[in-house]
Image 1 (tube, one colour):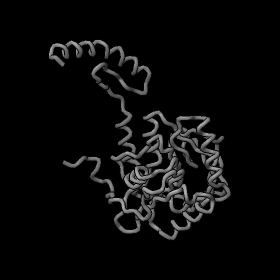
Image 2: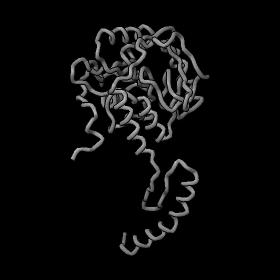
Image 3: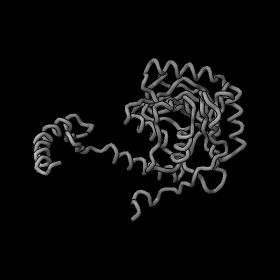
Length: 277
């Protein structure tokens, strides 16, 4: 029987590498991964990065071939890139970003500062959401040049997908039960947060040539994202071998859960002893 949530999910084709991982290049500092639909645009992006210091011998490029009708979705493709990457930092970006004045040394300085501020950071980008109605942005795009909002670095709950850095040691990744090309920046932030890591917008200025669009696929992805994370974050009881725990974002619900769980846990322990468990 098919999962009712997968019936309308877009088909996600297998990963096809344009530039794949190379096992013979140790000591990689940066891995730069991109889904490629336009090889010419990607070549310009790569040239921009290389001209700003992201070059051999300690940088690698992981490029996934999405030029045909059968495309790997962002969730699956970028998970494959994260698994293959050997860099200390993995840059996930669109093929239509271009570096400006800020270069590799700028990014390294920002990431070093972030590690001092918060050793548990996992993700750093150039745009994201702080709270309802509040954004942190440092970008040039069709919506405006040299945009900057909020004091940076700013801790965020989501990141825009045009450009962000994953600290590989954090082992953050994308949900395997979502697909498509939208909301994966928010998804990886939520996955990292569940493991205790944080995400930030930093002062690293680049140009994104697209302002983004909202097609039907965007709203389908939004519905799937909302359904998945509503399930994942819903209040629940967790029975371990040693305790019954109520999980809820509501402090009152947690307190009531502790009160209700104590007698039930005692019954479970007695039943386990009588059954020899």
